Length: 229
Image (cartoon, rainbow, N blue to C red; front, top):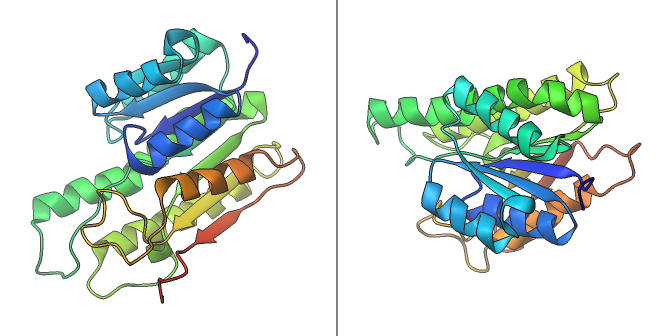
């Protein structure tokens, strides 16, 4: 329907982002799918109903102009934006002598600045719709991991979620921080036994989104039973 709510997702081409897109589509949302992987995005958008129900927008979250353009594409196509999930992220091996400085830079820009850019780009439209902002952090954003710069980036995302919640407190916009443990996605080379599936995280996200408007689930920490810490 033309007045169905609109759900924007960054990092939508695979994993948690793609699973959330499918869950949101099943719940009646129109989708704005953002990522760098144009071919995967277009395939997912086609699966979810094509241009009338889902649009694919190639977007590098480290470029603010591209994030602004993604939000404008949402408004041009659907006239509104009700939910935004800042989900794009990359990882790194633990150890401060591992990886390259260039990979570190790309990770920090994507995980921290990219998330902040999504907040900035979507906030005016979310205020107008009295919508919902969600940020994908991690269990690693709740505790420090040995030698993990990735953990530091996710601590930053957790802090941004609370900062955004405080800024938006009087607007009616809800804010949720999602903190997954081990999920069986390409992100992890060796996930724990019986790791979470992307669908598990997607269901948790939709549970928060589908609460009554006066209920704001601020934080969801979700681990597989077999993950010890």
